[in-house]
Length: 593
Image (cartoon, rainbow, N blue to C red):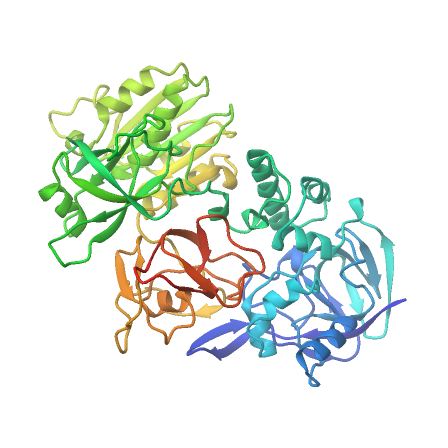
């Protein structure tokens, strides 16, 4: 017979951590007497980070007395008490390898349903004083699980936990946790998980990604990290590190944009890139000065054996000015293999290609791919520019659209000149605003691909969702560094620009943050590449900081790393986890960060 041993609650509060402040509800205290359980939590309880915890699907966290005994022995601890793992219910019974997703239990006056395993994050380690705790919970198959409240009511320690029904597929908490976080899952396991209606939407999305990855790889036992981070869904790089490419053509595209055509220096055909991917380049400077490292979208037709990148000359862009001023046909540039997950998906549903300014480059490659394949799909080409002088690829995109059976185009000039012709050069004057997107009558089953300034993409994304597209069908590409994800950490609303770290200059190999345009020497005072990035205010994303959640997984353009601790599951080929890795080679590493 399973029993509710303790009810633990606690409101979020601020705690110090590594010189920062974390707002967290992981600190729980046992309370006596009847406690009211409501749809979102227990009275007197709260969560500090609703992105990873809380909500209807994660209203109540459960952990078992048997696991307390296990960890007391494993960690050599004699101070563990109910609530130490941040759980709301400490229970006798209900082991993770017996409880199934979708099981329903009655405790006192409330009815509950099991929705998912515990989400791994660093805060359980913060509470426990064990930084690797998040990884240990997964590695030892003792995550605990969340409950959804089906019927609100009062509960009290000492009450019996009565099983009302078993979830379909009888898939245990421990099994589905292994599918997502550990290697060796099968397609059959993923399909079973997707047949469980009670599985939380977040985990359903991860399982669907794993299934899609299995379809593309046509193999069982593939990496589970594809369900945790989109970076893991990218194909392996076509070559390691950087290789020389020869400039074969330089073409102006607008007043501020020009293109470089590139070919293999040995005359061989370059590997086919996916439409939407980018190249990371070393831009040479004068002798004895390290090159600048920048990434540029591929804008040409995929599969031709050559590449084309297109570059906007920014007012203060050192690399773009250097390339326009000094690169000539016949020169050599070092390039890493095409990378990126902003890629055109296969299918027969409609496609919306939406861009502003030089953001046209990756979606132009997608348009080339659709035209090359004579795609019968509906294609909507939407582009915003200042005027015709700042409208790159105007004729090229027009010709591609004319060659497609079901394509239509709308061009918006924010300030057309007197020479610009409405109905010829552009469709409408003014900005491509959210209201205009809503008024286009876009098909709701479309996949939309957006690239341009961040503000433009944010408003366009909102408009597309308001127009009826599913959020999962709206794909965006950001030039430069992406947004940070530092769950629970309190900080300024405006982050400083990436910079050299404070303190003594490091003496180790160079670490280049390609998207941030920053190269710094490694300093052994940092325990990981993540810590170095944080010291430089490079935007980073992380959650567990122990090599289990893969939130920090990203592309390694060149170099090698050592891990400490080893990841619970290795990242995808060509990627690394920055939370637990350090550079090893004397020539350093280049990161897509």
